[in-house]
Amino acid sequence: MDAKVRLYVDQPLGAGQAVAVGPEQATYLFAVMRLPVGAGVLLFNGRDGEWLARVVDAGKRRGALLCEAQTRPLLPVPDLWLLFSPVRKERTNFIVEKAVELGVARLMPVTTRFTQSERWRQDKQLAHAIEAAEQCGATSVPQVGEVQPLERALAGWPEGRVLLWADEALAGQASALTGSVAAGAPGAVLVGPEGGFSDDEKALLRGLPFVRPISLGPRILRAETAAVAALVLWQMAAGDWR
Ligand code: SAH
Image (tube, rainbow, N blue to C red; front, top):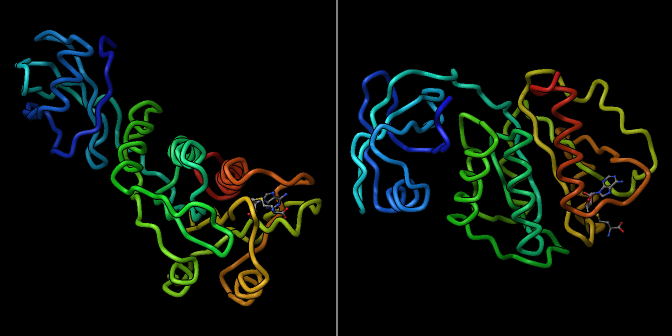
């Protein structure tokens, strides 16, 4: 493969399809990466799989690519949502990046009683998610939600989606998921902030029929480690790591 660059574009891809390159991507492709006319680029848009395209016009502020052949089919990501509390900036970025690599369909930031940082820039985090998808070979980008209170996310919960709740009170118990998640079924995982969940939140979660509390081993993990661990558990039990 002679393509050095992998790019997400929000345009149709198909044999002979022309793809317009806007100012931002032109700077990246032609100034930063110095791709000449004829160079190969891999493209994906979340719908049509991955395509090899050639540079046909490499201008300063815009350009054009031409799709040649599909290099990978669309690889649908399991229908898994990650609910997490925004933490410090670089740790939140870590959660977004790792969630995309591990495979999620939707990122849902939620605020809880002990959330320290409500800082969540949806546009910036979507850009992070796109970058992670470009690097890890994914053929789609997860939906990136606006931050909302945990109660609201739980109030509108869809039927048939099990929510694995990483409950720090279960630390030390076995973390078997047997019977809680069905392979291929929609799912979600919830991890709390560094301060954990409040008593009210624990009572609320315990009373909901779609919630299954789980342990993530004998040690208390930081929020971002817990997010990674919970996603791995779900992927192995019900997702596309099986
Ligand atoms: N301050 C809390 C820990 C919070 S850890 C305390 O001392 O109890 C941040 C989040 O990671 C928790 O809310 C939980 O969702 C998850 N988590 C961390 N370690 C865990 C474990 N061993 N089992 C289950 N969940 C865990």
